[in-house]
Image 1: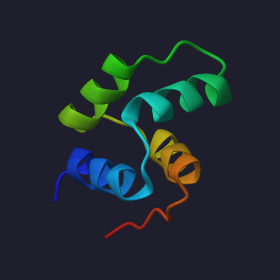
Image 2: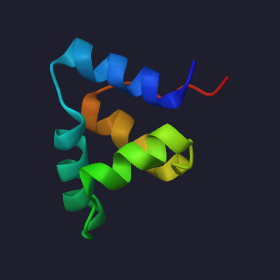
Image 3: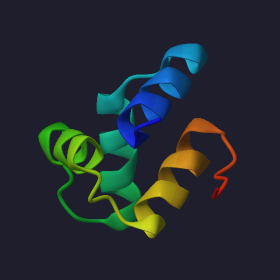
Image 4: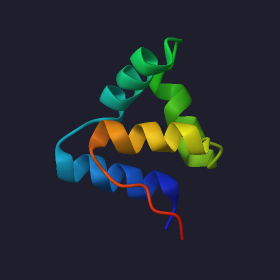
Amino acid sequence: MRIVTEVKEQLYQKGLSLKYVAEQLEKILEKPYSLANLSNKLRNETISYREMKLIAQIIGCKLELE
């Protein structure tokens, strides 16, 4: 399954939006982090492991490597 699909599925189940995640990443990383940037990284599967760990933390999920 693609990263973007998995993340969006988790967001839907928790009633959160990708925009909310982008805003939280911006606060945590203390640098601009737009919704478009996050969407592109997820869609192109170029998101870093660090960013994925933070996303999992933000949405209250566990990051598992297969």
